[in-house]
Amino acid sequence: MRPPWLGHSRDEAELEALQTDIMRFMAILGLCLAAIFSLVQGAAQEQAAAERATAEQTTVAVEPAPPAPKRMPAMAQNAPQTGFTLEFSSVRALEVLLQAGKVQLYARQGDQFWSVDADGVAVAAQAPSSYYQMHTATVPTRLRGSVPGNAIGTVIIWGVTLPTEAIGQIQRLITGRKGGNLLIAHDGTVALDSGVLSSHTGTNQGEY
Image (cartoon, rainbow, N blue to C red; front, side, top):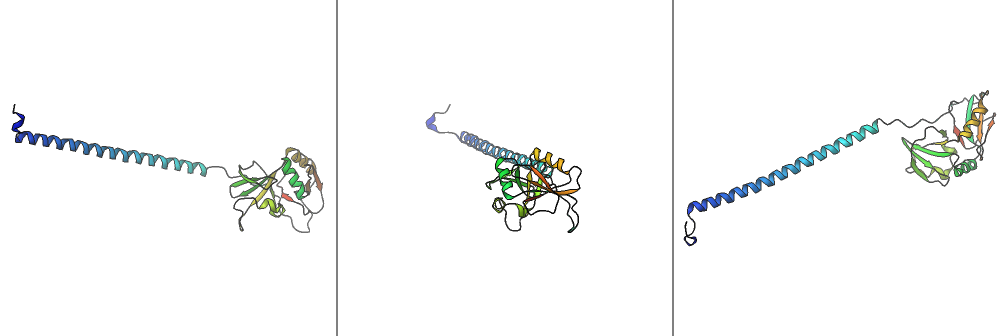
């Protein structure tokens, strides 16, 4: 054994240098492996996110289209009325029934529906199972302006859902008749006007 005051030999110095190089190499190798693992993990997360986005887009693509409103075939002018139209007897009748919750007013833009209350507040809503389309001009102006994005040139379709009592009255009134104008009063009752069409707040009714 060499005394410490005599210093290290050349071989010992080279061995220590080799050990230092090995330790540095192991440290660099560890850093490289950590970086590779991080890259692989990030790529896996990106691929999983892309697969989820693709699955979500596919789900939306196969969703059923919103229900089409019930409509009334167009009638020639000065011809006897065949079929039925459905209207509210007045704007006030519509507002009263909205406030009482007996009818629900909807606005549709593309596949998006809004439910509009009597105060003109519109909230996004699910498409109703069925509804009766209204002429846009017959919807009160203050309610028409409630739909988000209702700008000039935007096509908004308006419609209402009716209570089962009103639908039952309609079925009884049309039985055995060829046509006429059905009027919904503020209390929800329905009457038949077999004369010409009125200028009240109206809806288009499909085949009964």
